[in-house]
Length: 109
Image 1 (cartoon, helix red, strand yellow):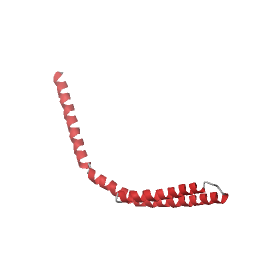
Image 2 (image 1 turned 135 degrees about the vertical axis):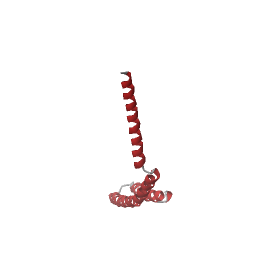
Image 3 (image 1 turned 60 degrees about the vertical axis):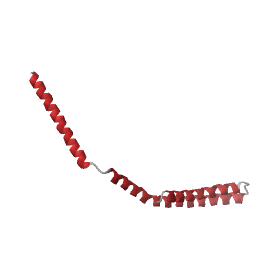
Image 4 (image 1 turned 135 degrees about the horizontal axis):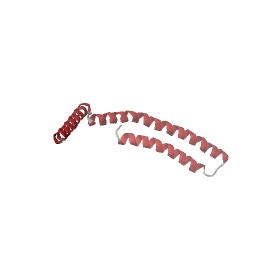
């Protein structure tokens, strides 16, 4: 009975080693180069950046138009804080444009 137990244990060990070897072979064959993945991600992000910058410029233009209408309404109604509102809206438009441009030049995209 003792010999049967030892033989079964050896079979289990052999089977585990064989499965481990098979897994190592499969993983080695299907493993990908990490540098290739990083370079592909870098290329894709850089290709999207131009579209994102254009989107920020478009959002800045829309914010500028909305701000111009708000300032015009305040000016026509005779509000005293028209200058503050105009500066705030103009500042937000300039901020969007400057941020897009600075990020573009800082990262060299």
